[in-house]
Image (cartoon, rainbow, N blue to C red):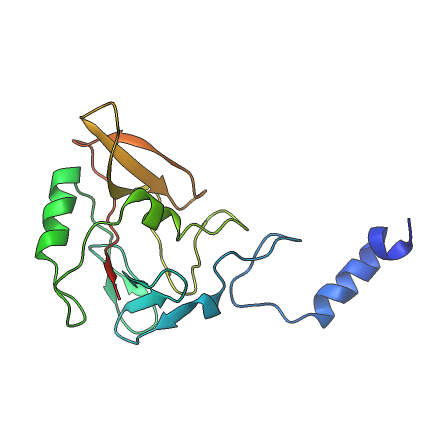
Length: 170
């Protein structure tokens, strides 16, 4: 094997010569959701250019100040999360909703963890799980959740409290 495959100096020089994207991935991995895959509307929401979904940049309970999500993200039961979404009005739209699991998982950044989301566009993501609108097929008292620490999902009792991020079609 040549030195370019094994030499730490070569790797270090390559890293210095290559500009880094705003989204930082683990070494050797490519971002699934780089910054340019989103359109920032400047109002606390961004659109995913691939899916056509518009997302609130901050979790519910937080507020967008133009640079970051401030405040403390709130947690809600599944029923409360659905009601919160139904009543939401933001950035001139009143059709916000709780994303289904596939939509929520589309935000998971596979090139890294802690957080496993593009934190340039979605800063200050709280730890813990986020509710999806997707109920579990066999267990009526549970619905699917996703954590952005690792981008992995699971199910949780609907009576438990989790975070909420709202979405709408663009």
